[in-house]
Length: 436
Image 1 (tube, one colour):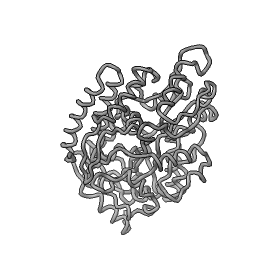
Image 2 (tube, rainbow, N blue to C red):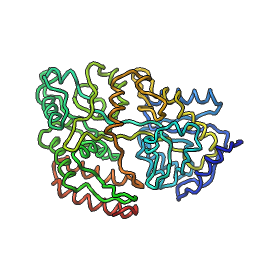
Image 3 (cartoon, helix red, strand yellow):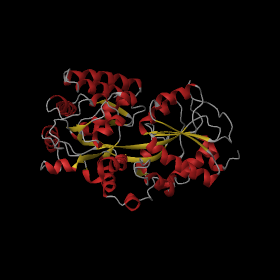
Image 4 (cartoon, one colour):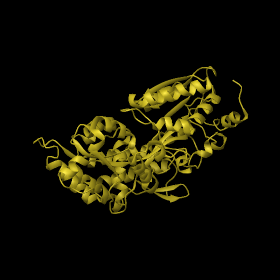
């Protein structure tokens, strides 16, 4: 395949990566269809399919698309072991550290990408590794918002919660005052996908942890970090969350074994009334629950504010591809305003694959005309934050999730468990060479 000068520059930054699992040289047929994987279920895959079909129509470059949800990370590692990676992978920012450390992706020169300057600097931050370089290309961003059963809240005469105390009061009412009126004690206040799988427990708990001034790690500057999970503020935050499970018992009973996919039905079928999650569920819940049945609000404040998790999805340009020019062409197509809007506009029941656009020339208010998305944008800009930019946050997320999950089972002492966890995290900081 003939390469342009820009494509050659793009190629240059994809060299120099290599581990025992990473492909070290291009393999295969450069004219073969681009193999693209997304971490998606059917509701998202339908949107991606339209996007890639339009790409082929415009460019003549064919795409072999595969949507994977269960065991996504495991299947990527299997392909890496066989030195036969897909050409492009779209998944959450949590994979950035792992892919970079393993050499599955190379450095990206964002100035060589058409449309790269149209991507907001904040979105580019989701693709930046701890060394200040970029190893992915942003595709979508989002922040957690709080979904509340509006009909239940109004029936019980409760206000929209603005603080943790008011949130807990509402959760208790949903749990004990029969908000659905069926005469059964079968509803719960707060929904949590709290399994340790992929570190989900921390993904859910991070909002409450930060809102009470706690954290997993403290950024000391110059690429150095120290452990913060055993600080007094962290202990206070975790103890408050433990109370949701063990004292007020407002959590859904099987919270600690649920993935997000398992949790969604509990909200839309009327089992739980409060759900902090991403905006990608609006379309699904509008269809299955009813747009008039729930409301979308900014997270109620804790003692230290209303900070929430604000991350997104990246495009990972996988190493070893025989078609770097095709990779570049597809990535540039995905950044265009037209494609970003295709990812935002979906049919009923489908899941948008672009939540908030990374292209700063695309206005979510104009495209969707939905105040709930305006709320999401405001939350992302005012209160959203990512996990720390360490070389690989995955071990920290996993270890912390396992400890929090154990604490929330009400069988261990919070301070003692966090102290034990702190010791493990200190060792991980040393392993990654970022301890201070």
